[in-house]
Length: 300
Length: 329
Image (cartoon, rainbow over all chains, first blue to last red):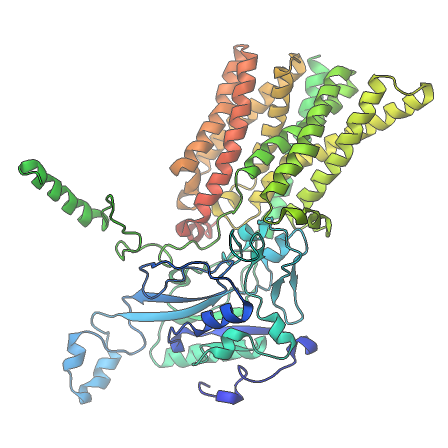
């Protein structure tokens, strides 16, 4: 699987847009080396403006979070947990080679792990931003991705509060193209020409895999199984298919709980709240009309 | 340097604080990125994005609500032959709904010159799209409705044409009432159907609050303009009464961490102050017949609580623990 090189779907030309095939990203932190090539490739190809630099003090992550000018974001988690069968603590170093198998199956002392995960727009099956957009600027493409048409967006900001993952944002002044809402385009321009999204193309370990969504889901499930067998007991897929979001096209393998990655465990598309809110609005409208009529009829 | 027991005591205090909280804030000491205490989620980063809206939006909620419900009062006044009151109410509706509201909305856009793109599509599943259409329809009723009413009052056209004008004015004023109630209430749906926990947890309360605050504001402005009639006084009692009930509802219907932005921080104080001003205080002042003070109190409350709800959205959206906690509801 790893090191398929030029045979991999990340390097092959394709015709998914022309064939209307649903595509996705599968991002796997177990092989991510935290190089940030995906962030650089994304900014360079899409000409995303520089939005400043601050030392965050959060491990090696000085990017912060996804936003209008950050469409890939490599997270650096420092956790006091065991990663697979790794041996940590001073006692591990002192043991002889022959003891190592016994150590590997035991609980590590002073466990510590460093996890890298490249975050990106999830391209939801039911997308909050797309439903909320009042201009029709946000559309679904032939490959099932969610795309903001920059020239149509008037910057109302409603998509910003409608995304359950906090991905899309309005670009502030004085950056280039300020005022509009921006997020990952899934490199739709590249895909139309049969090219792979920039981040997946440059990923040296195929931690980011681009391909057909159904293939990727099968690959993800297999990878979780592999990892669990080799000691990564808390490996799981993050793909909320059982919520109103009904699954995401850019899904992740995660070690541990989604909360640690800033991922909501049960994301919901805000349109599910419309029914009760409109019912209350109509009731208030009718009550206001009745109150006014009563006022004029009985107190004039 | 100061010597003595006080200095030593101070150091003891710092040690205790460090042990208890894991962090000691101080002037010139930036601990924003310190690893202890561990912040919730991913280094305390927001899980959803807080709203980017600025001062224009709460003002729009205030003027839009007031203008929309003025249309309802104008209709009531027309039905019960109070043409003078109807005329002033229609002026409020037209100026608030067709001038101030669009200006405020357009100012808030990131790209104001593209505001007409709002009317490219009609999406019933987007409260923002519905709002753009409701505001347009309201303006399209209120402005010609006001013109027709003024022409009728001043008897500009002769006989039969004037009868026709009267009919047209009546229909347009009823149209303003229908779209006006929606204009005053949809804003609650707008922020209630989002991913912001403190907003969506109160999606039933919000349209009631925004609509009723709009009705009370319209009545209050008309009273302050000199229309001290019993019908408007009744509406003042009604609106302040409903707002008082909503204040009780908010203090009972708590969701702990998930909606703590409503009960804590500066945003919580804005909500409380706003609700007290347009709820119990307006009710008491009106009960003791201090009508102008009751009207001013209500208007202030309606404005402050709108500012408060946007502030709540900013605090709640930036709070990862609220988002995680809200998923249990």
